[in-house]
Amino acid sequence: MARQNEVSPYSVMKSREKYIREVWEGKRSGLFDVLLVLLLTPFSCLYSLFMKVREALYRAGILRSYALPKLVISVGNISVGGTGKTPMTILLARLLTAKGKRVAVLSRGYGGGGEGEARIVSDGTNILLPAGEAGDEPFLMATSVPGLIVVTGADRYRAGLEACERFQPDILLLDDGFQHLRLRRDLNILLLDHRRPFGNGRTLPAGLLREPRSAMRRADLIVYTRCGSAESLPPRADVPLCRSSHCLRGVAPLGGGPVSDFSILQGRRGVAFAGIADPESFFDSLRAEGLELAATVPLPDHCLFDREIIDSLRGILRKSGGDYLITTEKDAVKLTHFEETIGEAYAAVLDLKLKDPRILEREVEKLL
Image (cartoon, rainbow, N blue to C red; front, side):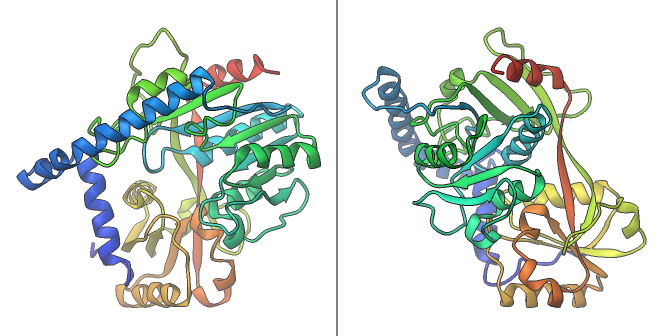
């Protein structure tokens, strides 16, 4: 199968991204790769020391943390890139909503406008901001769970106060909150990618860890993502462990509509594109569902789509002989303005499935 290069002008940027990530994950062991890691290791040590001192200052109360008047559940990770935080937050929101709880998500809103102020993406009834202003992940969460309140802001404490004062939720979900020590939480969930939980074991910039591995002790529950059916977890006596897997449920038309089985695309060739941390895993998942891909187009994480990119995608579709375009849900929410011009296009619907659901439910029920 022919593989299409990335959409210009992002080709160089994305190839560098991929190279650095492979170095961080320990997939490259050439002389230059080893020398690069050694060169960056002193900076990594300084960064690790800074993060350890920061955590110690919060633990000692020298740096102040704040409590919100409602229960807070944090979902986060210690590595750069996607481990499934958004699908996990959506799963938790659905679980709590099914129990009759009024739920609000607090998110930084990366990629949206106004990151420094509290902004209401959804009031639980109406979506108040488009994806471009809300950020792709907050918008996706708001549209995926009926009744979910979503508030964004760099200061999650202030955003939480805004949510509590205006909407009186029962529970607050702190999205990507593991490093946000300024806000106290009642349940701290840490996600680890089972395939490569710590990469090469180093922190930034020599590795993919946001914090040293010692930060794991703050977790009340560890959820391993992308687990195979027969894979076991490393034994730990200090914290409960839970397994999960990413599963593509089907495809939906880009403009919205019911989810259909992948079989509706059998016998046709697609062009897949994705602006996420690990686009290759998305492309592999599509192939695993039996799709034939005429071309794949990796884009930068949180890519902002414009007319040039859409025209490039259509050109790739035409030149590769593809029949349709297919992308992630996270990217699809940013393409609503191009529905009439992009042509036949689909969003692949992703679910996170727990292999040990009672473990998560038990930890949640302790709070309720």
